[in-house]
Image 1 (cartoon, rainbow, N blue to C red):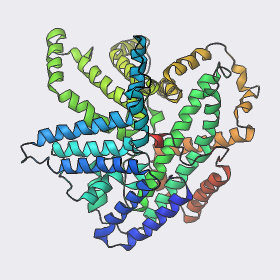
Image 2 (cartoon, rainbow, N blue to C red):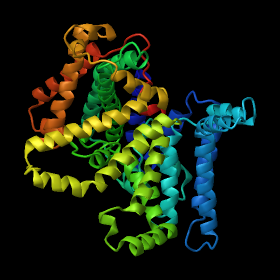
Image 3 (cartoon, helix red, strand yellow):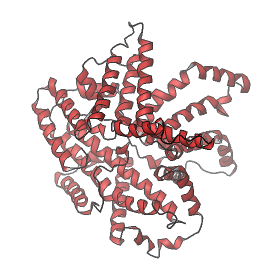
Image 4 (spheres, rainbow, N blue to C red):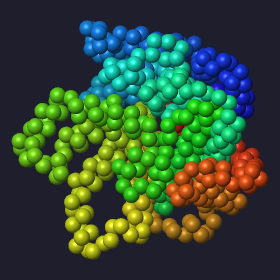
Amino acid sequence: MSILTLDFFIFTFIVLVLYYIAPGKYRFMVLFLASLYFYLDKTPWYQQVAFAVFLIFNYLASLYLSPENKHRKLIFRLIICFDIFVFVFIKYAKFVFLSLYTILGKFGIDITGSVFQTISTFNQEICPSNISYFGLIVIGYVCDVYWEKVAVQKNPCKFALFATFFPQMTSGPIVTYKSMEYELFVKEHKFSYDKVVRGIERIIFGAFKKLVVAQRAAVIVDAIYNDYTKYNGLHIPLAAVMFVAQLYADFSGLMDIVLGTAEVFDITLPENFNLPFLSENLSEFWRRWHITLGEWLKDYILFPIYRSNGFKKLDKWCKAKWGKKYAKKFNLPSYIALFVSWFIIGLWHGGGWNYIFGVGIYMWFIICLSDICKGLFERINKLLHINTECLSFKLFRRARTFVVYAFGLSFFRAESLMSGFQMWREAFRQFDPWIFVDKSLLDLGLDRIEWEIFFIGLLVIVVVSVIKQLKGSVRDALTRQNFVFRLAVYLTIFMATVIWGYYGAGFDAQSFIYGRF
């Protein structure tokens, strides 16, 4: 069931009514059954089986991770190996075996038609949808139970609800049990008109981002990426910038719908965005963009690597070779740990080297290079008497961060890593700034009015972001206004979404970019 359809909103309304009618101690069961139906609806039986097996194995394993169990370490290792196997074999088998096919082909070994191809096809059929989200949630829970950060949840229905709460099943956020235990099982959820209204307000704005802005940006992006040998020159950086706009409006709009839906049930999910385009460097950007994924990787990949015996030995070796303050010049253990984390980030986004490079290795390289050159940049700024605290310098740093991010993200959208490099090669074949004044951009799929609607919608998003930066929550600011004014604002956004929403040929309500992972 897509999250942006009439069926979803009717489904949510029915669940909402049942939720507040049910006695307080049974409300979690309403959400559990609703989440189960939401996920299993129109899902093939073999994916349902894979989904159930994954949840059941992790639930049963978590019951035997108590400190009193002398076999807890073995059980923990087995279940983590099982989870990794599920991810690699079921989700990434095609990528792994295609990579093997390419590598072995260099040595004259042809595996076409072998078991590799069979498994590659098999994995596409049985991979449970959205495993990238509920899979990480469950793995994090098992780790927290083993590390004794949280108490094991013995109720299987509560465990399943935590892992598969239906709004977050579409694309996250990637939650932890510690953050959701109170929200789902302890908090007394009383019906609140204000909460329901605030949730609906956020849902409306999320739909506006998706239908008015993201869908129009997608038209330009698709036109150029699908024929980049024709639309070369400055069309390529234009497509890269438009894809950033598309992805942000698409993903943040989806998050608004997800968090707004949870809010009508008086459940607060963690935020996934915090004004990322105000970031002054790439590290800060990724702390503000897809926040819950970054926190998950930090807690369950990066920190465990740092604490491992191998890295402790490497740290001692670096100190012996370069001195105790080596980390200020070249923090080798940190760079290696970050490489593993960023490689996983790239792989998580999709089984392809364009993902691993564009939102993985490339981002890692820029972040590490910035850290290595930090002292050099400080000396240059001091030598040239550059005021690093003034607004103009901050704007320069934000623009630089945007350009660096947009370049890496362009590979995310490319069909392959090689096509991404080919696109940027085409970008330097000619310098054609006249495309911005000769009306040739109107041939990309949007007429003049459609372009104007896109820029108005983008301006609305920017204005809301500025207000949020200056005043905090925009909805809180509106709440302090008179009812008539608030009603006029949200009716305007709702009607703009209905009238200006882009439902062109081929529109798919399930086509959220991050909803496909």
